Length: 180
Image (cartoon, rainbow, N blue to C red; front, side, top):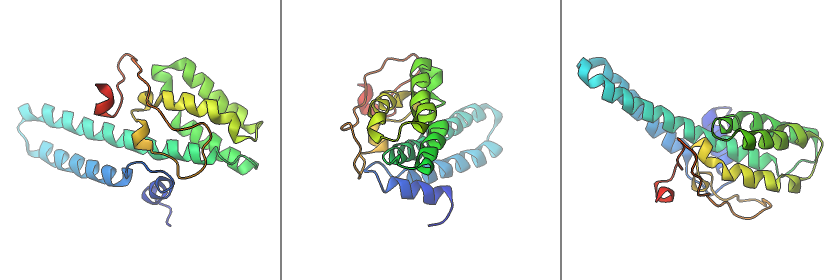
């Protein structure tokens, strides 16, 4: 229970086999705090390296917080029978999709249409199977991968997630093993 981000991420994460993002976020927050405290007392010539470490921690936290957004989008897109369920798909689409526009504006436009515009008129989860595959193919743009999101513990049409071999300038997959 509870209404915290921690409780929400834990709840939606329990519906997937993916990583425990809460534990990773807490670890990154602690690292960020230690680096900030070190920056305050460090000689000026060392602050650049400490700031770079802080930036890496902030980037990690941002990527990790994207995971429950995507998980929520997938979870709510499996039951579109009433307007409230479709509204949640729109909500999570609006929160999870925007970073995709930076690396693939065409995919963003298609996904926006599928999850935000058209979902209000189509009450079948199967209609979003192709959209889910397109979203998964752009996880790189979000700084996440299939392993981070995990496999659904519920019926999700369209088969298992497969990380693509994308070569998008400036974007790399989140999982080191997938880079090789």
